[in-house]
Length: 219
Image (cartoon, rainbow, N blue to C red):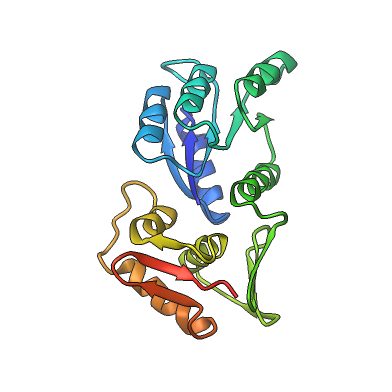
């Protein structure tokens, strides 16, 4: 899942990027409001974490700009402004959640998972397709009840396919969910991940749609 992180503190941004990557997110960081709005225009992410104290414009202006471009894009405000009127202003402008600094990383991860479930329409943290079950909170995967250990990229690929089971995801869409901006990606990297994942899952669960991408066959 692609997450746009709008945070101007370099050390906090780096820490959040590393922690959220461990949670299975592809994090694209920007440090200014103008960069954030350009990023949403160019390639709309799946969700946004927005700091309000940005150097070039107020974060609430950024939120209003995001809402004009992407009305349904989940946005979590993460800021040192903890007063009730600041929270009310952010929520009234269309934020989906609000977390004041300092914060607990586990709480942030749980709130983002809740936003992700809303985005995918999943009622719980568990996604099931046929014999495969994926727990978004614990990152555990089972096949017919037996645990399946997956490297991070394969887990992210499986999660993306399971969240869109029965629908075709293009190569570009899948690469966007696996790699952040600026990461060097070899021409056959996605095919390699699909190949390894197929060997660990029931036969014919992942199907190739020639010239388009891949789909996880719904049972």
